[in-house]
Length: 152
Length: 96
Image 1 (cartoon, rainbow over the protein chains, first blue to last red):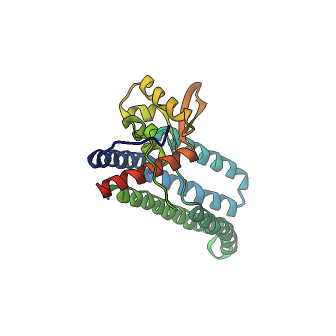
Image 2 (cartoon, rainbow over the protein chains, first blue to last red):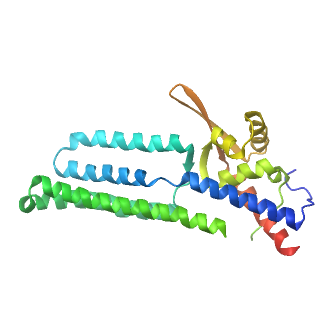
Image 3 (cartoon, chains in turn blue, red):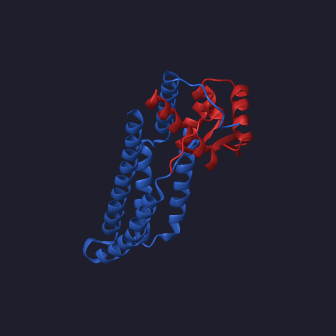
């Protein structure tokens, strides 16, 4: 049934391809997370590093809960669930982020003597926030790139 | 070998729009799809049922704040059929 003989001429096929392109672009626009989302997740991720480095681990659960709430709010708001990165890119991101998270906590604890307890924790949390924010910008660029490709 | 295959189920205008929208996403909410296509609930339901019947699409229901929401996503088979259909459309445009 799905592979019947068809009688579509070239102009009809072109029209169908245009419709497809338009809908794909609309979907990608919907799926692209707003800038505030990346910034907020970056800030929360940085807070995780700062709190862990400052030996305030009991509060990290609130940050994780807040992250879940923000992600779920964004998902409900856009009414779409975006296709995730290609698996390789996602794994590469995790390979970089997870060790970096722990390395920055260790670095903060080592820097506490020279910079002070609060400053060292904030500095390392800040570095992690910046890295996560840069990754979120990379994600936006990835969506934009697909959008441009669809427009060609 | 790359295959191209014209698919009459997908080619209907509204169903083509549904597939093109969903192919870029993991899933989308029914209401959003209805608004993007500018059709009524019943029209969208009819097309979704047809795609579901051939195994191209699946529905998932969730309850948020006591309100039921329906999410729609393309199956692996649906994604493949859509890709093949697009290839066939491109082939038609190229050759004629």
